[in-house]
Length: 245
Image 1: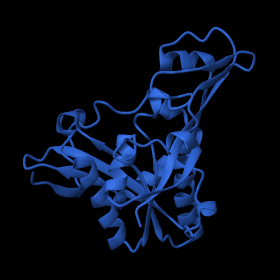
Image 2: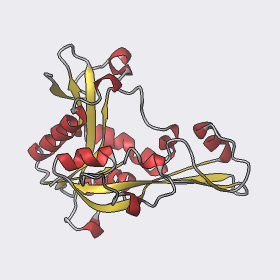
Image 3: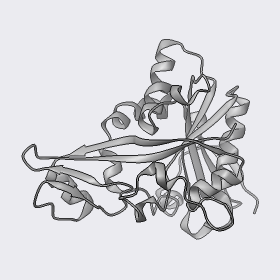
Image 4: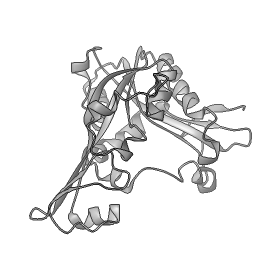
């Protein structure tokens, strides 16, 4: 399949061109991360060169991926806590004049009808190459394991050790990264923290939340903790730090 790599802002894409690519998207509660909301506008403006699309012969985007540049000394202890703090470090580093040396791959997406063709790996590869050309010698990713939602009560530290009979990771998204040579560095149990009122969480999840306590929610990688007295729900999304180089 012949694809070319373009920056997402290289041209104006019509809603029809992007409709399928983003048709499966992420859970609605992902937008409830206040740290991400604070920084994502500057991320999109300042790091557009790391927001890429793979485009087919007909000019239709079929996959994409994006990341941010940060300064990281190579130690696990110096990693951001996860996705949200990666955005913060990238933005604050630029504002403070800190030269980045590491690409953080923040996400990748493939059109549903093109899944199973290795396009996620190609999107990750394009990001890695773009980072290399930008002088970012290291590449890491706070990976969102796609099957963790089936095991929301399992601690992420345990989940990342689960392997299939052939020795490869149980989770297919972790497996994709490993096939590209990445290795697991550490769990990121609070990669993102989403907060909202009880009514907002009922809207996001489609569940009634009649009393305080922990709830398993659709597409949640961990549980939602509800406090009726405070009128608040808090959900911490676990990821897995992986290093590509």
